[in-house]
Image 1 (cartoon, each protein chain N blue to C red):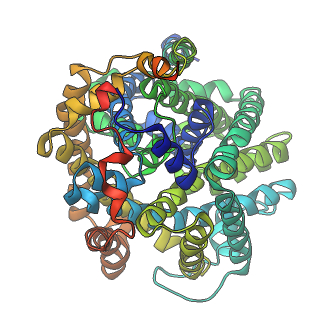
Image 2: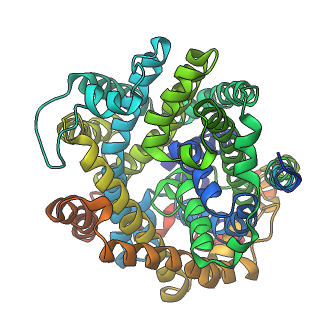
Image 3: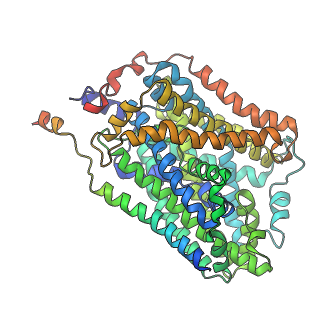
Length: 43
Length: 517
């Protein structure tokens, strides 16, 4: 493989697979919790 | 404060079905997005449109049109909690026809998509003993499909009819199980299986002689391509067709998700997961094509192809030549079957869900009422000697002047006609990890329509100028323009019929003040 092909392959992997990893991490940090007003209503 | 009493939400979930968790929804959405196009369309589109340089328009299209459009579908379905027709009707009574147009498109796609899956099922078995011998092309069109001249012929081809019937029985069984146990569970089980099977295939392909030349052909950048409008249109087209957006699937699925779910955060995962699989498929397919080119002593450009030709002609040739070819064959066709099946389930669900909502039918009643006629149409048209021609024409026209056209029109109606984007962005941002603000409204109202209208315009011009693939004019008129047009007429007629439950459109079923819920 030529140098430019290897570089573009690595960039594609980094952006797309890295993007997936980042999206998963972001979602894991955002649990689906009921909103504050509804929690209060249940109390 | 919420304007949707929790009891209403629970009853609606019990009545319509629901995904048990965010994870199940994400798997189902990935299962829908990852389909045949990821495996057989993306690699060639990337190769043809600048190779490594295609990464740039592709990422730009994903971020400026694909993911924003995914959010638009999510907003509509998640906020209005209905199938495509019900969500559009609740948005504004007059737009219900757009939803039925999408249902009609899904009906048409399902009938031919099943046929391709039936072929893949047969080829998974053919791979074991390389049944095509040394002439894969002659075998596929001749011995297997028994294709005659273009036209319509009612002679049944038993080798297609029987697996096609089995595909429909499998679909019926899954759909009868319902939203969670059928639609959701199918993807939760099969998507990991697909990734593992395809990963083994990729690793095997990478160790074939010539694999590096294949990857070199795929990734060598042609920077000149970036100034070519058709390359950008190809990127927007690929992203659009690959993500299962704009024709009801994501509206339907997001109506089954609990109202506190982080939809934009989930959408990012779905969008990037779909592209991730596409990249993996590109690597696997081009490594195999590189081997094929080296084995036949030609350049990669002479063996590179896409679609039916790639799967049923080029791959069989690779399977015959490669060491442990049977393994490659079984993994490749098995992957096609699984990727196709999880997409097929989502396409059929759009129709079932639309019919259920409108006519207040039970899951079982609607499933049988939808799938039996669908299977009959499918068997009549696609298990005969003329099946492949009808399939090719319907596929091309329903994609361009069905999916793409309804997507562009509904996007323009929502952003410029009804001006509901501010309400949608409030709904999406509420409780989300991502603020869907002005950037999103600009992308959906200006950037994405320009990209998609470019794709649509180029394609329309091409089809008017030259008859698609040189088929007879009457066939293009009936199965191409005719089918695409009939679906539109059906959509707007179906919207005229009455809702069985007059309360279906009342606001108690969804949040009138989405932002404050």
